Length: 330
Image 1: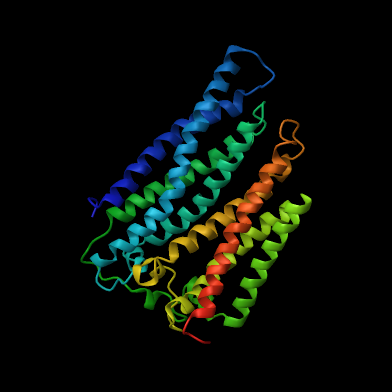
Image 2: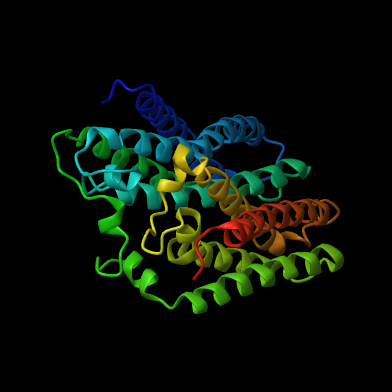
């Protein structure tokens, strides 16, 4: 299975990202220790040249990190034909104990990598590298998570055995499965629908408020994260059954397949995009009074707010379309 092109791309990309991270983390530690923007010493000039190099390297590395989430779930879905009992990515991920932890860690790293890219972009816009310590502190937290993801991903692909009998999504995503997903499925549908649409409307409303007034950035960031989590639960609880038009089919992975027009990809893209850009607004709030950023950040935050609004609106419109035109009536 390691000869499938997508797996080779994931494995090669993981090695490259790991190497870039180790290189960047080494210099990030030096920069955090020795950085003094007021100094004109040769050492400081060397650090300034290195921070430009590190930022460039990490921008490319983390851009691939974002893409790798979609490549991984695509690959997991394509692999299901190798396993008896698997009908989609859910079966492939359940083929050994590393599959689902890799997915969860990839989601966390997607959000953190997106936030790092936002902070890095803002730092590069300031004439005195005003966020240098913040972004490299975040990098030192992010590095071990991405390295752990690479190790777990290798263990997952390396541990796959085609003769293994795995369980299908119909077994995993049921109220009787005794998992977190089963707890979500067991929740009353009206309550989940109210929670989803309330959070979505609250986030969109807070986005409009921030865009117009420049106030409530923390509220938007918190609402974006909450909406992201509630939307994942809603996707399992009730959105999926309207897509499949089956009241017992709660799988969040079958929607990646051709039979459902690959609908999972735009759903996950808009959901993750809305979360990252909305969180980015909140993350940037403490730096609005930094001298070299005070004239720049408001416009950047406005653009992030607009992107978050567009992503979450697109997600909501897809969901509403499925609810209205589905043949399933609950």
